[in-house]
Length: 389
Image (cartoon, rainbow, N blue to C red; front, side):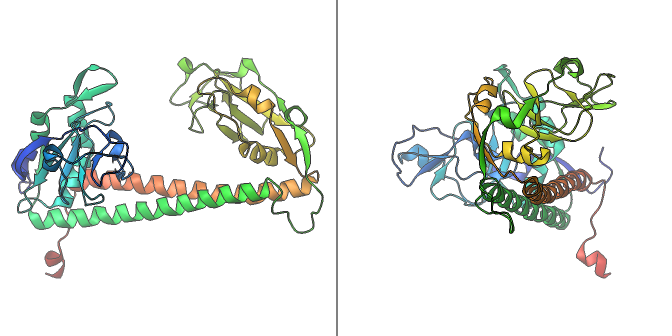
């Protein structure tokens, strides 16, 4: 609902120059030519992925679809969650064209601030509109038409306010980008630490003993308990006990079952996914491919988790990997005090990563809420001349 009379209810066609045009998909070449075409994966929610390009032979059709800084791109054919993705091309790649599965248009910058339009097209309302208009014979690949894109609803406040809104949201984007860099750096540092500390390359001062070899059965015990498991069809959105399965998320769902796994801490190994989790609270294991491991008396449990996390387990696709895990040869320090010190260092690194992930999630939620308020007129920004009055 529009709360302000000075916000114009327009469509995308009202604020662009010329027509919306489909791209061209030439055959790619084996060697570089100096000319490129974007791949379908180039448009992401985080912006343009410049590695998603293919070399092409230059011809008139490629010339007509070469991108210029300031052009907007929209994915017209993609999976349901990705169709309608859009971004502003900023000249990241020279001599780059766009494929038939994308559309291009150029904004009328006398009417609309380009950055403001970019945020409008990324907003939840616009994405929901484009998804609702998508159609196709396949559930995995849908399309939107030029008419759909042209009729995209645009709420247009006065020009000065557009610029101010874009500046405010850009501040959040910069904070998100900074946090993402800090997170990536912390994750890289942790990987380097694991490589040093879990191979004996960087022993702690005062610990000189050679690391000993051992096989999986000597260090780890499989401790599954079927009566505590929950099938995926019985996952709840809320409940008394969290469900831990082999998926990427730490908590996959909840259950109210009284049969829960209480003998913690444990290591959860995804038989199909190779994902490894440290669980130190009562839980219900997922029924499919969730292997519960405990360490033998030779290992500190937390050190065992990190040792297992550093193991190179070959990928067999969605096949089971427990057999490959059981064939790995491990090396470990026999002194449990050294094991505990190593686990403490890596746990500190994990805590830093978790903190940054929480900060990042908070920033993204704040930006999402702010976009909803600012782009719909629910919240008005204060312009510089108003502040000075």
